[in-house]
Image: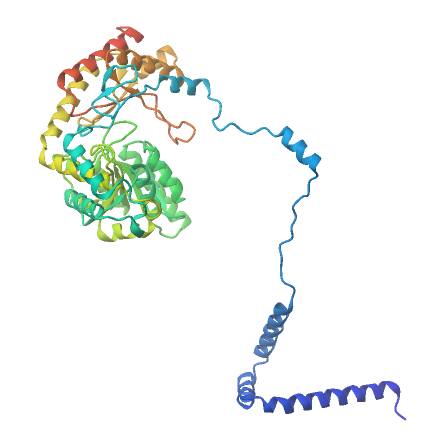
Length: 510
């Protein structure tokens, strides 16, 4: 007689055998079962690892499909009515407008209030009309009658706005014509137009420079360039403003690091301004191009202020130094200043421009330039090419103003370029040291000059910066903008007024 365990084992074996026979019998009735069996025998012979792996994946898939669905639990804290009332009572909202500091209040109180459209002569709220030397109206196109007439015609034809980004339905015929005009004027293959001047350079830089790439930038670069570099998240090195020896020192240091770290080659750019907003001097372009070819870098040149001003034709820095436009990889400009319109552009090869139509964030996601501003920019460019003597008038005014102001003993214009319409008046360094003046005290003294000159009928302003965000904060200054619309007499009287004010505040001899 069999023992109980042996009997149970036989029963289990018989059950397994009968179940296997039934399943095997049913399997043969399935369509294609013979082909599947033959495939398994041929595929898995002498490959036990594959059998184990695929069985594991099958079981995992079955377990995943049969497992309970994942739900995010609601972990909200349930508060009682008393607790809610208590939190409401103690809550203190932050003010929409933060409390102004003493210095901020002084700056705000010193801002003059204008009335009516801007121009070479600006009407103020107190009824006086001042000669405007604070606006970037270099060519004097603000208030130009031809531009006004063109603007009115365009408004009647196209309306006010474009109502969409360029890549969707915001591109009009006037945008394409403007891009073509800019490219022809500069001598490049193509150009792309952005709707805002500030966002042009801050969008162009991150369109090409990405995380891990290398940017070597001028310390004196304007705020828009700083923001573009920050957005790119590239590795950044800075060199002293317009100091080519220091630039070569930085590039040599990078070469030595490459040899030590053996890091992979990445995209590398040198970023400079043609005409510096913060200093009023011009970048030494010929030397920059020489360095670019020596060290194998690309140049991003911001011509926001030099476009329409420098060179025989007003075509910018390449025109000024008579160098081929092809030596500049990315040429960025603004239509807000010399052309007194709005928006910006980037000019270069067709490949450079086409890349930005999908990768230039300010182009892709911003509404395109209103038609009226595109037409005004085209009209301004046409006037510049037709009436080239406006550049001669501008340079004559610059020379007259500098000849008087440079003789004032208490102030300096620094290394301002000969043809720069932007002039920064700063207190002489030796006087700052002698009087032991802080940054704040320098700003107050300069504001006194601004106030005195304003009483004489001239609107000038201090250069204002976001000091907490500027990487290399420039010294306090009065920024003067010379315009071709100013008469020689106005320029002479403005310079004499500054001389008188400086003498009154600092004394005739220092």
